[in-house]
Image 1: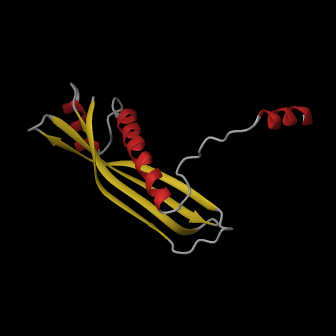
Image 2: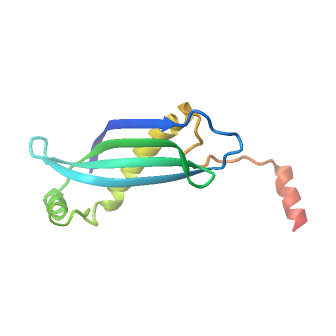
Image 3: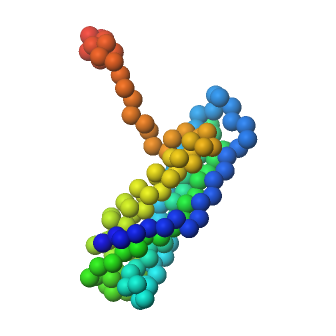
Length: 142
């Protein structure tokens, strides 16, 4: 069970001048980089790193957001999870989805706010509202 999280590092940058015609691409990556066992608090710390890279017109980097932190986890299978990490540097299948999803959720929310401050596009596409008239026109054209 995830009991807490903490962001330990946030770095963000963007180019000073971005042409209005620039087609911006965004790529995101999340990874668990280490697991630490904390016997004092009886938890595992899943250290993660999230990166979002903004590229212009295909290749040149025009912005970057990097977030590092950890997720605090407790549960019955902590020893098994930690031993697998120590021997193989792989997350145990029983925890992979939960830890990566939590890390991604935490990071995306923060990265969206940072992207807005830097006047970069949203990390995730925002919902679009369309009027009923547009839907009717599309149906008639088919």
